Length: 208
Image 1: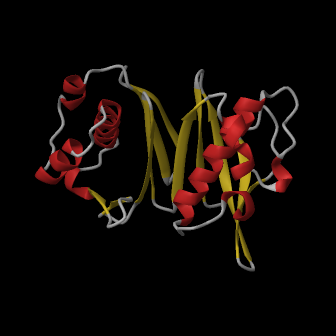
Image 2 (image 1 turned 180 degrees about the vertical axis):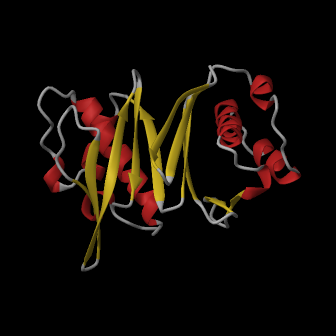
């Protein structure tokens, strides 16, 4: 399946999602890959990761991002040379990209029971109350994606998820939430955009 979801969040921000059902060969169709991109692709030993990389490239193409505009910095984080901001996410058979003129972060994850085991590692003390009528797995996955999106937006290595990243309470039907980054004596708040699909969810973090 090609691009399955595209959304203009506001006049500055657009995101797109790709559910990957194609072969690696099919995903390369229509792409113009630089020598650097071909090397980056070949360095991905897993078929899942190679297909995710190509799906990201297809999304960038659909969003009008020229191949040379999309680069990676020394720590492997993506950036655009035209001054806009980018964030990407890939998990199993789904990839997502968001482009914005402001700081932005995106993360998506499949619903998996194992998230219950690792929840204490990323839950803030204020986040243990599950919204009414929402399953524990869905709630925890939303919290995780929200914190990952905040982490990508804030761009400060070493933030402690269960102490410095806090998601304010939200309801089952909430499409918008608030996330906070607690950095020393400073607290920064950001908008969270929750999107739910059948087998996975994603969260987009933007400035307020």
